[in-house]
Image (cartoon, rainbow, N blue to C red; front, side):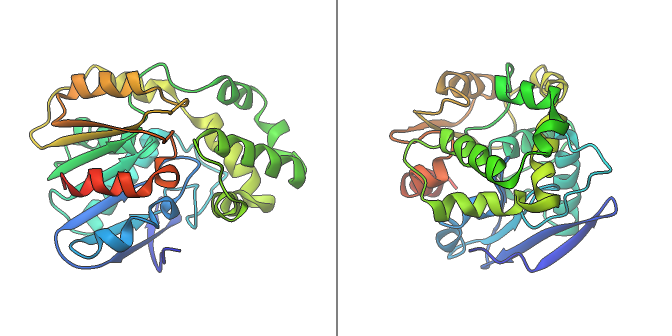
Length: 269
């Protein structure tokens, strides 16, 4: 497990983060409902040649899960901007998955962050976004937040298994469940779903163009959350330097095919 032994104050709440290794900086940005632990199989290799920065987005992992503020995608991109400034990083290499991809893209196209390179992995970046499950939770957030633990745990396990192509072990599934367990964690899971906004994606789509740094896109061929055709469209819009499909992997590619993912990253990092 990755150690996040540092804390950063963000809008009255604490963000858990850590860094490992030395060398050119690499920032890993996870998605939802994942945490920085989705990178745990990659970091030991990346830190051999880079200083790797990992953090848990607000409302996820070991970071605070506030009930008193909206946690939409714009908040997470604001957090990324602040963390890069706090770490005093200029033009870091950024590797981002799922909603982390949206945060990184907003960081560049809206906040004018510059990267040395950007690797996008099964990224949330284009409409349509969301699923019938997301819409149902948004309409009934309070009812979902009040589920008994056994029902919530069964639903959560089923949801994240849908993101993977291969069966997830109970041990792995529990890594992602743990932050969303208990009286504080359970409602945080449904709250974040309810706060997701397509407006943040729509505002970004019209800005897409080729950045002045390399963009590499990696996609699981079996991704049912965000089909690979959408990844190819994103690659066209950004005029990506490479597009790498990973066979035998779905949306949660870090668990399905970590070796193939690492290889695709290292060849272009």
